[in-house]
Image (tube, rainbow, N blue to C red; front, side, top):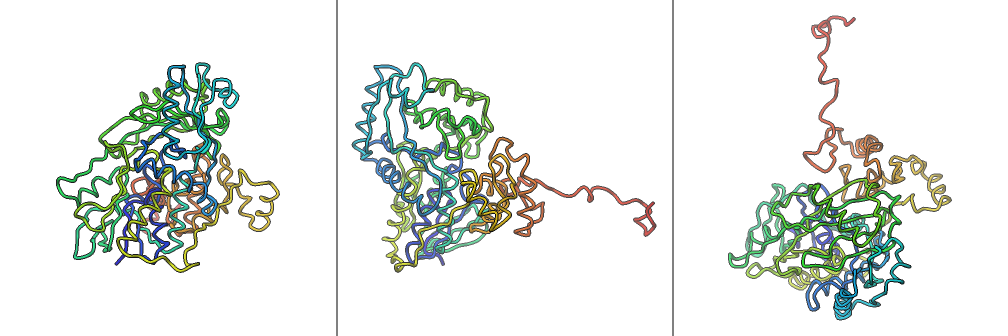
Length: 495
């Protein structure tokens, strides 16, 4: 029997699980995919939003601003990458300055500090590659960029270190009330818990509707966003996150550096029905290219190393849906977490865990029983050469470079393999170390990573996947497909 089952190991689910482990509680996270951070949390803009866009008084506004504050604090304990580069919302004419002022006033109401509107000259000084047509911008210095993989993984590792359990490849197929508990069938396993938190991303409506009354149904609309990711050689084309003035479909196409030194451009915003449709389209990418050129000139799209698409869990009211479901005691929704959901995740974790703790009358662990820290993974790209040399003297595997594009060593990969939750696929290693994420997209380092997974975890080559079941890279050996010579099949000697 668990105290709490969290459905979904995205950034919200992992933040909630981590915060619940501050209490004397038995927590389990169930996830339909093979690892944490496999849905919306891995395919987004990786932006720390300042909080000027959400409607004042909304839950989204409150949690965005608080999440922004906590993000920079948590990074110190959890060792994930976040950089306060600041953001600029650009307008193209004097008539649009009113729109910037409305955003500024909204941000002030929401509690966003240090917002101001800058003129054309200051904008060009800050961003030499800004469009020649740019007229003014809203400057938000508390905006930033974050490693969305690193954040989610850090939360999961810290939750696990403090006692949370994780079940992967465990889609939820049934949720039923059983006495004072909930019975959740996940991955064919029947689990009991006093409380359930529904943090299932674009599938949160389906989990909600399993327990809600017919007149209290929830509808999540998958909103697809397509992106370009450019090489690190393009990473300094802009120094801040560049937004267009937002519309009803979102904040528009942005151009931004990433914490890994790349340049990201996107997204589109297309409402679809298929919750698995993360394919990119020629039309969508052309739209990104066209709109990005409105705010930033000469975006070097020839330096693209990959394109990708992600889904946002949009809900018609455009606010987070968080709280106990009516008529379903101790079943809590954490649904419709779209942008600025990544930024809000730390605040969501605190908010939802507090709700659950109050409902279950959970007690905080005694002082010292909860460890808020998580050890970092060495970063050879940013490390001083002397420090790297010292690491190599201590462990020569730090000098054995597996991923040349992103400078990832054997020692780093071995380090993350032996952490919990345990990465068991190429993409799981990628999210933890950056290996396969460079310009060759894994063309050089994939075989070596497979060898390390085989060596360290005892996995057979045909058990190693790109991203879970159905994406196996090896299906057999060449030997198995070649018949032995007839002379050896009946005991004769081969010649």
